[in-house]
Amino acid sequence: MFTVEKETASMVTRGGVRLDADVYRPTASGSFPVLLMRQPYGRAIASTVVYAHPSWYAAHGYIVVIQDVRGRGSSEGKFNLFAHEIEDGEDTVQWAANLPGSTGTVGMYGFSYQGMTQLYAAINRPSALKTICPAMIGYDLYSEWAYENGAFCLQANLAWAIQLAAETARLQGKTIAHHTLATAGKNLPLSDLVPTRSGLLSSFEPDSFYFQWLEHPEPSEYWQHLSPQTYFAEIDLPMFHIGGWFDPFLRGTLHLYTEMAARSQWRQQLIVGAWAHLPWGRKAGAIDFGAAATSSCDRWQLQWFDHVLKGKETDILTQSPVQLFEMGSNQWRGFSTWNEQQLTPFYLSSTGLANIDDRDGTLTPTAPQAETVTPPDTIVHDPWRPVPALGGHASIPAGMFDRSAIDSRTDVLTYTSEPFSTAVHLVGEISVCLECAADMPSFDLCAVLSTVHPNGNGYNFSQGYIHLPAEPGGHLRTIVIPLQPTCICIQPGHAIRLSISAACFPAYPVNAGTGALVGETRLIDQQVITVTVQTSGDRRSQILLPIIPA
Image (tube, rainbow, N blue to C red; front, side, top):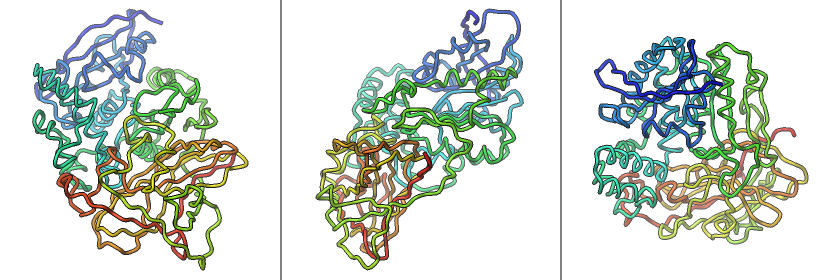
């Protein structure tokens, strides 16, 4: 272990913009590899909300550089979300590699925006960049960050936009703007005439990326230009991927990992814990997963960097390339690949009262007889009292909560299995296939999968949401809802429950039913929507579960 000293250093990009960084150095002779993090929140934070302080990494024999991206902290220029990170990232890598005492090799780490800056920096393939450790990223920015199955991620997007706007106001010394935005960030403003169009954000940050995202509600060239996936076909580096079961960007983490694992010549390591976007501790929501759930990512990353940048044989190489925390058993499990198991169908069945009596709707591995016909289950979605978001991956706070009170609402359909006699292990991706119809051109569906304890409490562990664009109302449609991937052990005596609703507010906007664009729908336009789900006859609704052997 080394003692550490800190200094501030600056570089100038190819366009003449000064970028500032804190540099942490071991106080010892010799040369050391560089670890680089580029972030927009003020470099003193250095992602310590989830990682060890940079001095910890420096004490283990690394020069650690924490840089303010363009227009943030004390760096010059105008901040424009993701716009300059490819060239600025490349310039920074090469500058860091040439710092005094550097071996000329660079690794990057960080999560969220700091994960994205790693991907952008890798795109032009700077020769000094030898490895990246992207955590909780959107590989396809549209479908893995801003939108989920066509639904705008309202709560997460607006909260982040207000946070960034508040930081801009702080840097500009605008006291009133900063105070107003910082206060709003703790109690999101959702009472505008057009609920998604924050008047407060319009007043203080009219050029926010948030409005651009609202104005591009479908995949387009706008998203292709921004998304790292567009530029990544020729990129090949050893990567250490980090995700969380309750992270809104898990889809992006797994997308990047599976693509790289399929084509890379280098080892790709995947770690997914029982974590929300932050923090990475032993609790996610109301559930304590035990001491083993607490993040060991700093120790694992250090082993990874020691191997890739210093050529050491470390314990990371003896682990399986896929390390998943299994909720329920509360232990880490190793796998050679991700998500290659067969899917097992469980069929939805009821007498038409799955919204009234939680004993009526059932999940069973045996398909109902085709000749058995029962009334469809019905949801009447009232925009005056939309089904609220609770936990999961898309709402704040995230994680597992007892949702039995929500499941007792008459605008929520529930389907519950028999308690399992032995432990059931689910590892991988889940999808729900519903045969349904609605009386309005457009509607949304939310599917939540919970484990039901013997006392009747139901704790969500996976959910999905989909926005159905406008079509003529009334006809039966087959809707597939992808749920958040998971790794969980359902304990003996516990059951699973699938809950279906037509809203999950404010994680996602309330669908007005008219087919109007999400950024143009006024509160007064929101309509009552009736949705029916068919559970009998030839069209069988079902959930597909990734059950693996014990």
